[in-house]
Length: 346
Ligand SMILES: Cc1cc2nc3c(=O)[nH]c(=O)nc-3n(C[C@H](O)[C@H](O)[C@H](O)COP(=O)(O)OP(=O)(O)OC[C@H]3O[C@@H](n4cnc5c(N)ncnc54)[C@H](O)[C@@H]3O)c2cc1C
Image 1: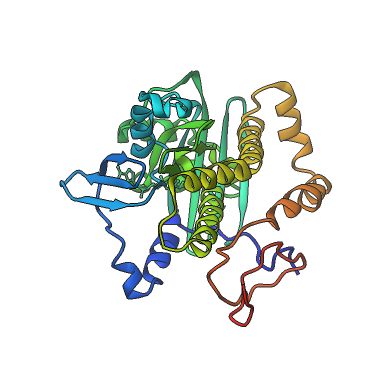
Image 2 (image 1 turned 90 degrees about the vertical axis):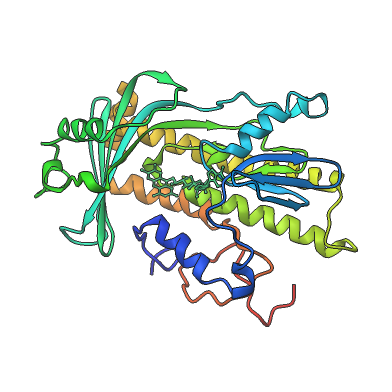
């Protein structure tokens, strides 16, 4: 039996998001305004007003900005931090910088499912992951200089970049030129960093908006989910113990501080793991080369890593305390925070 009851499965993130949205009851789905673009947020002692590009406004008691690495919410917070009342929460904007760039593309699976390969070179590396139906190719390269400049890659740049990897093997039988599909390709500089202040007034951030990792270790999305699960639990506890549905300004600020301090160590750790994975795959220094080339591939090393580092951390993953369910996937290691069954009183 595997540690947590399932082997890693590669899937398209958009399909998970779609499944989560479609799995919501009708009443809850009505509360999702997909296709709206947030352009401004006003935050006061008593609430927030969110303005969208089409002029629609929404009022509420707080904003959770999970709007990605180029977060508009974060940019608005940066602007608000020029005011004296928020100056203690000022972050630089842009807050992250990129040392590497990455091209990704996917294709119908051309070989066995459930494989993960890694081809390494000086300042360049390749990852190949096969899911049930599709397979993903990721090509990494160190940038000549670290940069904070946003960069949009054209189709031509992407095709040229893939061509420079044409003869790199993705496994024993296939090369990049056999599987690169330009119609599914995307490319970006890989911003890296963790924000110092995750909240300002009644606004708080989660996911890539406040911590951006390189993707080699596959930890970005999972950390975003952990942010939201913890924050929602804290907010739910606060509304349970207050007279009405609203949470006062001071209490909200305390919740946001508790949220950030609880997430600080896990995100710093996973940020470091991700950065080290990128650099060891791309032989950034002789030590990274040695680790990437000779230590990490050892099964004994991977076993020790899984047993003493990965599993003890992974078992601490949070679930929503107030959502009941049945966890049908059982592994060798019990979760520290299991899903609550209907019969269990909270
Ligand atoms: C090539 C690659 C491979 C990766 N592989 C993995 C992996 O295997 N495992 C893993 O855990 N992570 C992986 N990651 C990282 C993962 O994709 C991110 O960490 C994750 O998508 C971040 O989620 P998010 O919700 O914070 O931001 P995003 O996924 O960027 O979502 C932000 C959302 O906000 C919306 N938005 C933006 N601006 C506005 C606005 N003004 N108004 C309204 N909405 C707005 C966007 O439309 C989008 O829907 C990978 C990343 C890359 C680049």
